[in-house]
Length: 572
Image (cartoon, rainbow, N blue to C red):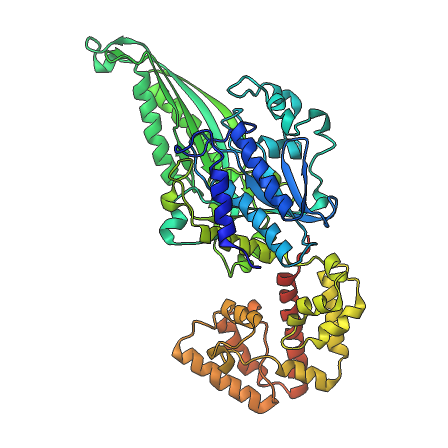
């Protein structure tokens, strides 16, 4: 059974009902009764999908198919279910539901051994204990027990005290830490939490980097005085100086290089805050985010210089304290590219918000898949994302995690192996059939070498049949939409689906001339070339003799196979 939109919708709605503020948005503080209800629901759904359940010492929930051992390499898929007060129904939950749906789809299709593990991270948002991503930070060892004891919820409980009924155990932090050897990578589906994708009607995008964040507390000290009796030139107005800093911050965000830079003043407190008193002290926060640390370093320098310069000009004293430093996190480039291909060349974007993925990225291959938020609204009861987009994201993730590793490929039965490797060589499954007897395969390179050796040792008529199995570039099969999925993607990547009439006619002439001379189609690795390079190669290769062109075609076919293997098999 394919990914089910109805099941996803039902899950979103069921988790949304687990809230401390019915009718006023999702309010699920970590370890609260509403959060516990949502967690219980997720566990029940995972168990119904045939999964074993465990909670690590940090309080993160894990679910795997029972046939997949806990120490076997698997893909992590998930997010979080905790919320900000009066938040939305999709933030975090979308990623958890994607993991559930992939587990169910695997059960429905009898793929009990699909290496996937649902994870629900504890305390991602931060309002409950005053720090975000506690579960993931603990799991990777970035946070220790002493720091936890000072983090209290509204009831005065520490993370350890409140989390003890849900598996939090400081004695197990070290032993239960993330073991990278057990994971192929992490894929987190999440709503964008910004308006960009919705405005562009972009249904899916891959996150290439998570912006770094630096936060500051700035205090401006002036002098309280009478609002009517103090001349403008005699004032030491703390709020006036703070306002100048804030306005210049906006300008800095618009001009900072290399950028982009985003600056936010989210909290401002004025003293004495009286209608007829010149402010003597103004406190405000600054949040700066950028996709790379170099931009943040430059912005930090400019912010400090700005504060110093305005304080001197406005005759006040200013203090600046950096309160948080979260470095920018590039996602795994190979995983980003693989996700993009799995979704049909999805665009790559940047996340301005922090996520658990940023914490795991230094430890295992990590990437995120964004779905749009209506009008960019998030952390709000009006938050909305299309269920169809969540289902599409689930299908992309499922497509990727079904790719076997060399180890899984080596363990496959004959039919499954042919189904996976048969399309590597165009309409020539006989190559994969012979390769099955050469298992095991240590790597993609090892498999590729064995496949190409089979081609090299094949009889001349078999080699010629392999070449003739390939379509003409921009030929009749392409025009009629009857190419294989692989050839369609390759010709599109080379720009062959967007030709002018003159270019199309030129391809037709060259194809005919080449066939007339050699008796087989012109073969070139389209993914390694663009249309201009391919057109330039025709006249050069038309000068060769037939034996030379047979050898060249076989070389190009092996290049094609190498790239197809990289798209069909995951090698960590």
